[in-house]
Length: 370
Ligand SMILES: *Cc1c(COP(=O)(O)O)cnc(C)c1O
Image (cartoon, rainbow, N blue to C red):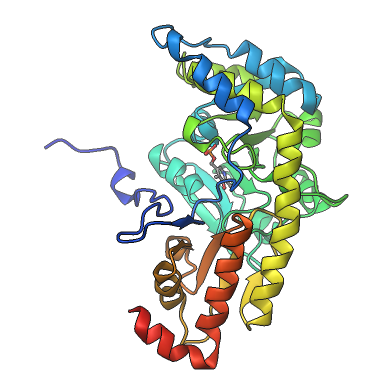
């Protein structure tokens, strides 16, 4: 009988955030942390400009894109490896550094792809208990064994929005043996401000066992094009370039990425939008008695601790208002919803819907919504 390798059938397939609501004309898609402002118009133009060239292979080395990434970030282009989304880079790093019998560490409530990637290569994902929904450095270090090959840390973390201060990330790195690779997933780095945060590039610069993963799917609004990159020590870049597909990043994605990096105005606009609406929505939800976890990303993890007003009920109620939040039961958070910051009217719709849901007199409305 044909059989997949051990571990494969233990993988629960990754299920993305919902995108459709049957019967609703306008759907507010707040389930996948996409940028409500969409991509830079220049990126869209660059993508279209590639249409007469669809018969051509892309530049397998992504020279222009790597140079365009290197410039504003102040990094050496030869230490950048591009991927079809940072998801591909998560898989490549795992495939290159972990295998059967090895352990791959991540925090409880960490991004789901880490465990999926580990199981795919026959390694064992080890979920380390979180503290206040975020990574607990001491607990993580305590779980390092001679079998540990790889430690994943999303900072800020998805789906919790929690931030680990730079000193804590450095302490985590310092406690790891130098034959363990620390993969810092900074998918939301552009949203974070403040002296307490580092995206991980400084750690990569000084050490041979750290990589930083980045994506164009979040603040750049290019999720459809599957574009991510890793900043690596030279030896790790060499390894990833051996295991990646020769043409792993489509030409239209490369072109759009270059154009997006050239539009700082759009980037600043997306950041300013989030800086305005993230605290606004958090405050509104608190006023209604809900408990959003403090977030450094473009989303809020909201807890529904009242057993009479569960997260599932809230999701159904939001759906009845045309709003799509993300259920996070697969992350072990069945009492929470993750809600992406949307356009102004979408955020207002979320706030008023949840106020109505949580209000004592909301019971009648809730019954009506079913
Ligand atoms: C969205 C997300 C990614 C995936 O990004 P892609 O580039 O779209 O594959 C990776 N890590 C985290 C923490 C994310 O939230």
